[in-house]
Amino acid sequence: MRDLANALGIEAASIYSHIRSKEEILQRVCFRMAEEFFGAIEAVKDEDASATEQLKRAISAHVQVLTRNTEASAVFLQEWRHLSEPYHTDFLALRDRYENYFREIIRQGIASGEFQVPDEKFAVLTILSGLNWIHTWYKPEGKMKPAEIAGNLSAMLLNGLKTNLN
Amino acid sequence: MRDLANALGIEAASIYSHIRSKEEILQRVCFRMAEEFFGAIEAVKDEDASATEQLKRAISAHVQVLTRNTEASAVFLQEWRHLSEPYHTDFLALRDRYENYFREIIRQGIASGEFQVPDEKFAVLTILSGLNWIHTWYKPEGKMKPAEIAGNLSAMLLNGLKTNLN
DNA sequence: TAAACAACCTAACGTTCGTTAGCAAATAAT
DNA sequence: ATTATTTGCTAACGAACGTTAGGTTGTTTA
Image 1 (cartoon, rainbow over the protein chains, first blue to last red):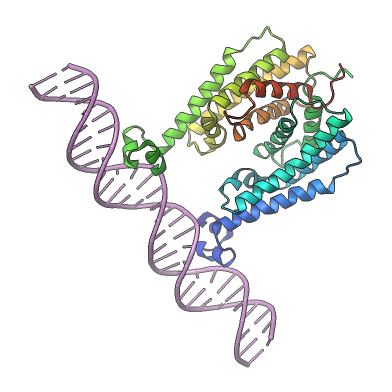
Image 2 (spheres, each protein chain N blue to C red):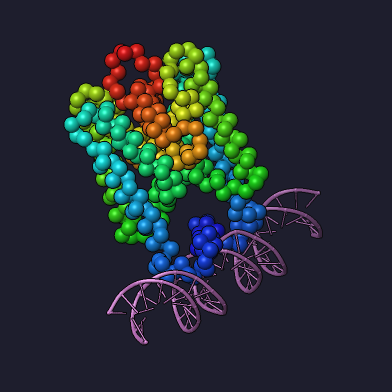
């Protein structure tokens, strides 16, 4: 709190004119970021598109949110564990719902014959792990731009490392 | 420290008969795990094998270490940031060296025509992100065993989601 | 113009933190 | 048998933590 106050140029106690508690900050960051992610993925949702296309768009949307809010994303991805009840439970429910967007795409892709995966849940987990590692190394001033990251990630996850013989 | 002492059934101050400081614990966990990972990957190293085979073995070795030490792995993956100098710098150097094992395999696979990736460094990052997410959901009592996890992960990373038409 | 509110202040609260000092008992080494 | 070493204890330190109480000042609102 004292660091935060210092960064704001005010006294630590003054922060409490704006928030009720330290945890409220955590709550706000976590749930605002959840909204961001939902907003982004819902904006590109198109159930008529192929699963491949849908996945590419979902990945792109996710990467955009992540790279535009690197610090808030780090909180969203790591610090939600410290939420007290009922926020902790609520947050997990939101995360599950978000993961379901991806699971649904995978399911569709399997049904249409586009995808072939060993395990559906596992596939979603691997995709999201690849996405959610980005915030640890992404730098806005780096040479790889968000769109390029999304493209590379989609390519790797869809085609794998192996030489594509098609 | 008081929590730790409580778990040990002793007083907090008694811990200091065994360690110099709280950070020493962090240092020991981080560097012991680094040794574990290096030991495991060096044990399966075989430069005569195909890049595909090498990668599968490296992934398997990594997953074995990760699943056998879930809590220490979480520290190794997340808390190393809090290491003071010179440990912080030393740790990063080790991590770089470890990543190089994977980068070398990727490089070899590209050279041999086995792999086709958009970006070498990016490929390594994606592989390791998939590996290092495991500790957040893996449960020894769960139905997916380490060998199965390694197999699924290799399959996904090598072949991607897309139907394999070969 | 008066009342209400917002945004900040100083001072301090109770708690928790990592850690030290100094001592006692048990175990190992000479 | 004595001396050292290890492992634990009680008591307490100073620092940092999140937070509250109560007051001042400037800005909106009635």
